[in-house]
Image: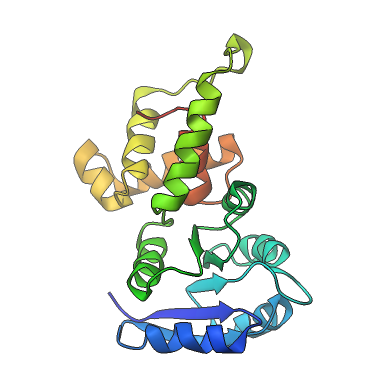
Length: 216
C-alpha cells in the first residue's frame, strides 16, 4: 500500500493538531490538508487531493453534515470518517446514510483512527463497536414491527452472497475469488445494489443491509 493522503476539518486547533501528531508514527498516513470548517476543506481539496477526510460535525460556516453531502457528491472517490463528540444515534444514521464511510467519537485512540482510515481507504467503510451497537439496536426494533409483503426486498443468490461478503469486510478481489467470478462483476453487482437501495457508498449499503435484515 502507498501513502494515504488525509485531510482533517475541525475548528478546534489543539484537537486537530493533536490528531495529526498522534498519527505521525504511521508512515503510510500523510496529512495534506488542515481546515477549520467545511468551506476551507472544500476549497483545499482540488490542490491537495486527499484520499480520506476526518470530519468534525459542528463547525462554523459549513458544518460537517453539509460538507459531507457536498464532498460525497462532488468527490465520490474521497472517503469520509466522522470524528465528533456527538453520540446520538440519529447523527450516526444521518451521516452514514448521507455519504460518510465511518463514524468515530473524539475519545477514540490513535490506533482506532488509523484503522478507520485504513479500512475506509481499502474497503470503503469502517464500523466499530459503537456503530455496531446502534445497528443491532435498530435491527431489533425493526424485528418487532409486523412486516409488509408489499415492501419486501428480494435478492437473487449472487446478490445476497456479494452483499454478505461486503458486510464481512472482504474486498472486491477477495469476494471474486470466493465466488469464482471476476472483480468487475462484483463491482457491477455492488453498484447495482447501491443504486437500487439509494446508497451513496459502500458504508451506506452495509447500513441498509443490516437495517433491513438482508444479511445474517
